[in-house]
Image (cartoon, rainbow, N blue to C red; front, side):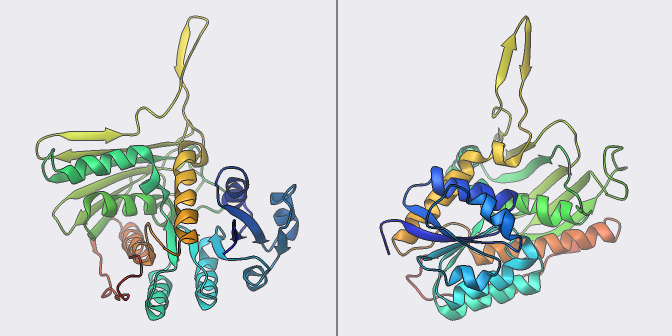
Length: 342
């Protein structure tokens, strides 16, 4: 491995372009070696001004490009399985944006393919694990000083949903972050999901069931509720409150700036997840680069991506059934060999 880790970035859209910028300007120890996107002009625009980067329209061409030693997948979710398996076939470590694979059957194939290798190659992009506020909440819960966690109250709001956003995507795209955060914060698997909805907001596109209220039950007896509202119109807000036996802890209230001018004061609300979680993304990618350069894989893995897909599918089934409680059934977890960085 050279002085700088050569990374192939798959996908040059909103997320991919931001990761290209991050690898070039923020993260140390890495460089963008190749970019792949079906839209060649978009890929060229994303790497404008960077030297030594090859541009491709096919995944395999980018993975086989000179200098590629690792892969960052930021393409749409349905393309992830093929890209992950192609990276595994070349023995390339991967940071894959969520969802790892949207459908649980495909996600399990990825888990099983990695298990057959006998070593971890995939880190999944649940960046909230790298957010400073979430990290403090995790430390408080792990310390036990508030007693056993009983409930998590979560809020996930977006200014507006992009074109083509579906009612199911409120769960399998947006709430997937809360699924992973809940599993991580509590150290428990989700056993059942109930997805309810109030009357849709007048600000939601026609036919979109927005907002929604999703309830998770966990194997340890905790309850997790999530208000997801992707067309709230005023800002991007993510909050989480843990209610425990002897106290509570809440995050997400103090991440904005207060502007005072000409006798008025107003609080600025982030308008985008790339703003609210900019530091978390930076920490996540830096941790991945550092670990990869030392031959390790850390952070949320393929099993976490699979579990999130299974829970999300149960949530979508509950939504489509009119709010029927839907059990979550995980497959047996394949084991990797010892010393693989699990």
